[in-house]
Image (cartoon, rainbow, N blue to C red; front, side, top):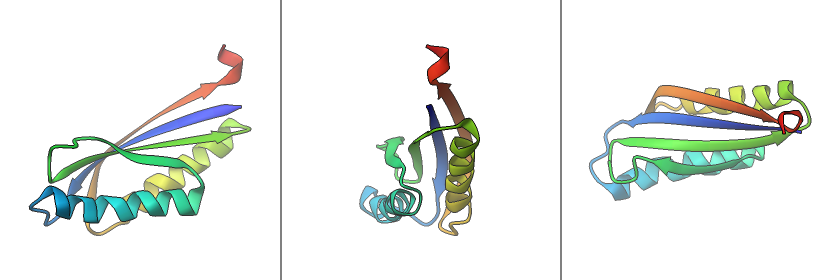
Length: 98
């Protein structure tokens, strides 16, 4: 079993309040969950209205599948016109490492 974690640092476009930020971030999180069956949430920069940190977690039977799902999640976010993906960091844990 493999567990992958993906942290996506985003710069939001024309957003001037935390309420507008929620209107941009929430649909992205919902789409990640729906399309890829991952766990996703806003996980950082909670008090800044033009920045967001999204956390995505995936569990898979092999490392390759974990990587494919994280790649697809990163592409989905990077292709959204209302945000700019500043960075993507990923970690992979394996049951064999215990």
